[in-house]
Amino acid sequence: MNIYRVRRFIKGRIFTFLWRTRGIKIADRVSVLGVSPHIAGNGAIELGSLVSFRGFGSRSWFHVLGNARLSIGSRSFINSGVMIDVSTAVSIGKNCLVGDCVVIQDSNYHEIDEGAGVKMKAVVIGDNVWIGRNSIILPGVEIGDHSVIGAGSVVTKSVPPHSLVAGNPARIIREIAASPGYVRF
Image (tube, rainbow, N blue to C red; front, side):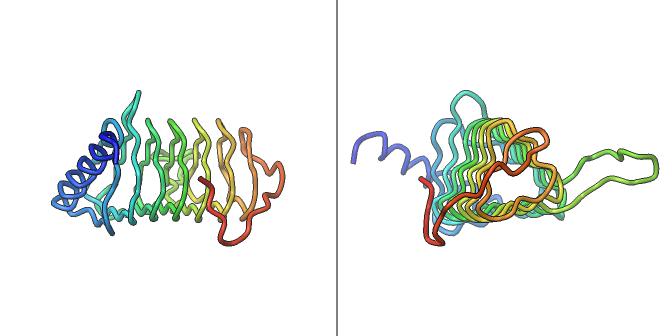
């Protein structure tokens, strides 16, 4: 083992211990490269085994309100500058890749039309999904397994499994070939 892997392993063990003392459920341990994400709020956070966080350039920020729930599946990777804001629920599946500066929100925080109220609806991201840099995932979106969200996309509607979507608003570009056991790494 080289010195960098040893340091990352030790740092992961320390953050696993510290986050567990805050009530964050962690299946095994986390991996933290660079600056750890800022975690705020009193909501429930559950991390699968070997979830990795990268914090070079800009720090990620997770805000989970009191009755809300954030779940990140095993072996998922969260890159620098990611912002996840949870009012109800955000679920990220296993083996997902979340690019730099991605924003995931399950609430619009303000009413759009008079009397319409604030939209709050869970965001569900399937397994083996890749979300490209600077993408925005909005309330109520479900992204199917093995899908790819192109960089800079604004996802306003649900995405079927095995789809490549891109644009503002995001639209389906083509279908993706991926067997059920395929993992994108």
